[in-house]
Every structure is written in C-alpha cells, then in structure tokens.
Length: 105
Ligand code: FES
Image (cartoon, rainbow, N blue to C red):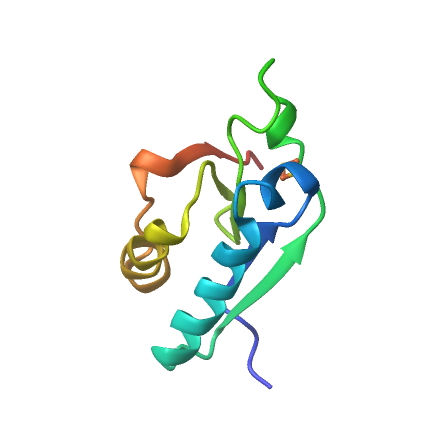
C-alpha cells in the first residue's frame, strides 16, 4: 500500500459535534470518495481544544486539521467541504477564510 498524501482529522468532541462536525466528517468522506481521491485518509478525532480557546466555548467549532502541513481550520461547515477539497486537497492551498493556525516544527 502506498502511503497517504494527506491525513484529515475532523473533531468529534461534544462542542464540535453540537455544531455539525459529524456532517462535516461524512461529507468529506463522501466527496473524497466521489472524486476518486485515494491518497487521502480521513479520521475523526477527540476534542482538539480549539473549542476552549475563547470564553465562548465552541466558538471556533467544528475544528479540522490536515497533515502533513499541520494546518488547522476552524468553524468548518458542510458548505465549506467543496472548497477544502478543491483548494487544499487538490492544490495544496490553504483556505484562508477558515484558517486557524499552522503547527510549527
Ligand atoms: S470539541 Fe472539537 S475542539 Fe473541542
């Protein structure tokens, strides 16, 4: 088996779940499959703590992280999935309007 090119984590913690992260996860899986993209792994994660970065819990939910770039996205909705696939997954471009931060090395 060839190694994956990208690994996408979609938070399924309770604050992100309350804002539709399960639908984001399912939409990502369906659209990646429909696009016949086979080198991208999609996984659910537990709470990534993005939801606790402001006094309003869940303000930045749902959270999505894409490796190996280590790019974190916030407030991701089902309506954002197409843009994430077209820009980040296919072209390696960050979706600036959803950008939260990039991990350091
Ligand atoms: S529940 Fe998703 S970051 Fe906390």
